[in-house]
Length: 384
Ligand code: BJ8
Image (tube, rainbow, N blue to C red; front, side, top):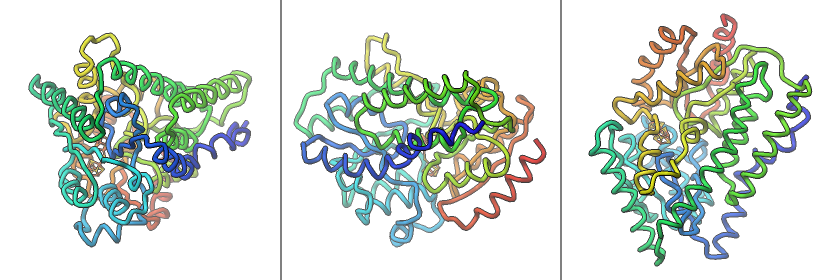
């Protein structure tokens, strides 16, 4: 039985969240609520949340503003970076327009250099992210960068951010993570309960919702409803189960998920910054020092900018087992060197240790490769 047909309005509501978020952002500004823009999962959003600010993921998932970006930036650059810059430069992203400050990090080379230009038309604070997760010096540096972020925000907005406020923000963000996990963990059910396209709609949509209590309630109720209906027998057909890993997806790159599901498989999980990479690990609420707790959570994100990057492998390994995956597809954005170089390691791990098929696909934000994506997915899924 096709469950999706019975829940379209809820998924559509999340699908529309970005557009509806524009109005919410305007309303927040009218109430003088500070708005902090971000492009990356490493940004510890608990710090701005602690002072009552709202945090928004800035537009970076469409090719609409790439030609404007290419006036200033090289063409041979990751589309996420060009899109981010283009939306900012042209003021076509209302979230960017309403953001009082953008917080960036020294992740990949292209992104950190792009922030230098972005700072010409927007207040930008760049956090210095170490490239190693294993050294104590790295953890110390990241902890001090989190404290520096707090001080920058305090100065810019004329407030004091207390540790108690940060503790409350940690609890709130953890509850939001738990709610989202309850939804995407439904991907572990076999046969599938919902499609990957619907999971993605909720994950992507939730990044544009400002009222966290509402999001927690809506997502929790949605997950409970799907599980209840699944237990009553409403489920999708049994198809090959795919885990997506790699660069962040959402917006234009939903085409990859669609191509997989149009060609006979389901995406059951996302090991990327739209899914587990960002959400799975909570901030430890029992650690007395809030900065230690935040540094530990965020520095351990398994992004390919880290060297080495064992946390990506560890998470993927667990996910392949828990989601009973039949294959892994690695999505690489054009000109993303770190994820691209890491494909060999992921391929070896998936093929040799998990003993399931692996494929990497390189894509951008255009629609020109949809035919090719369909052909490749059909051939790959056929052999599963
Ligand atoms: S934590 S994945 S959101 S850096 S795709 S801009 S790496 S060239 S987006 Fe990312 Fe943070 Fe990592 Fe997640 Fe550079 Fe690659 Fe482009 Fe990337």
